[in-house]
Length: 348
Image (cartoon, rainbow, N blue to C red; front, top):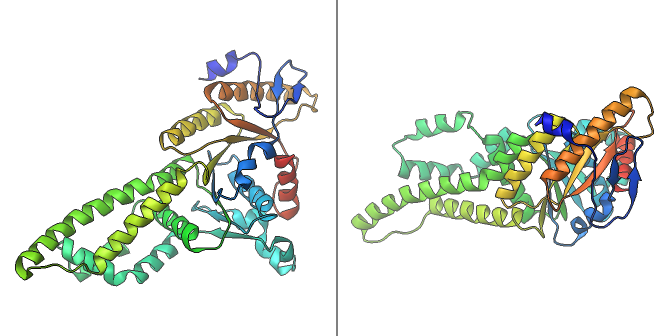
């Protein structure tokens, strides 16, 4: 793949809405499209859920915060992190802003760092009786076995609880826009696969419950649905609701963030392919940390030439996707001031 990247000669990034053309000193021709035009559909009334994802270290959290700030000017917006290694609070210094009494400027924005273990404890406490009854009637576990089972670290717990939190927020909260700052690629893909995994689990439990219902009806002559049945039904409805939401291009979108580096581009192309198979809408890609053409030094020019070749390779592997190139920042992007600067760069 690196050979293919090196073989590219001219970089051409096309826009469906912009005629602006920039010819760089190294003969790379770039057609830039303002990001604001490409995400205009996100400002539509039905655009409720926005996922931001990509390889780790590409700036997903920064893009999520900038997008949250931008949307909060018009909508009540929540930015939620599903990454176990949270950095939302660190990036925006939200707690420090509160102490400085500057939160009025962000009164339409809230951020949330999801703790999967805490969410699981809430779920278990809320549905303890139903879960006990469900396992009691479908397995050979006794009460002690069931308690020990729920005390274990369950594989996929982060994704499962993130999925449930998103489901609850989209149904019960009054947030008009929810931006999901996902974990790096692998975790994000597992999160998006969670509806199918939970659906399979519900099907298995429903089959086991059917045997229980059959035996009970054979001995009592009838069967009355109970709280365990209600739990399975509610889970099934939640799965269908969120699956419909995330696969509906008018209500949900996935924004991919990457950097113009060979390995990152390769993983981004793989992510785009898997998102397409999952029927998730990807309209735009944010290409972060691009070296500006204003730097004339030999080092910067060589790096920029390689970056533009990588971007050109990405463009050739994708269709009907808009690009937004964000130049490298000289300072660390942390705190409201620098996030605002990044937001302006993103939407200018």
